[in-house]
Amino acid sequence: TKDEKVRLQRQGTTKATDHSVFRSVSVASREKAAHYIRQPNFSGQSAGLEFYKLGPVLGQGAFGKVTLAWHRITGRAVAIKSYAAAIKSNPPMLKAVRNEMKFMRRLRNDAVVMLHETISTRTQTHLVMEFVQGQSLKALMRRSKKRKYLPEGLCRFIARQVVAGIEHIHDRDI
Image (cartoon, one colour):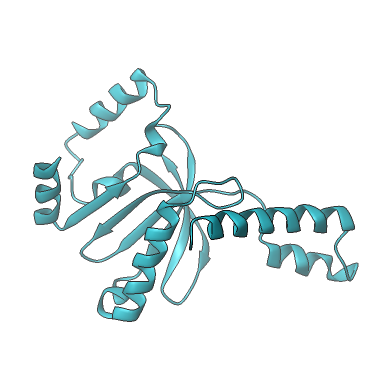
């Protein structure tokens, strides 16, 4: 609601949620969420991140890191991409992050990682995304250097996924 948005902005927390994480949540899970929110240690400050149990760092870059996490209510594994506070003082980088969020919200395809929600505080911006288990293409290529090539069937599978993802992105004029 508008009042909740104003309250979150005053606290320094704004959140734009897709709610797709909660589409299939049972009544019992909703009751568990309500119980969790009523706990004395629930501050309401970065309320979105309090719903995630953070795990190991999966990767790190110049502007942030990606962490494996689990939603406390649904148990769903997610990847949380957290941008450092420095991007807020870097207008071109901030614009790039906002564009990434805008475009990811429009994408719903098996070949493209899905954005569940975004959480923004005074100091950080977090993108809560679908967690895709397995290796990166880079790691797969490194591992196959011993053979000097990837098997043909695997190459076809990867190429089909890449083309399907690009086709979906282009269909949305991104």
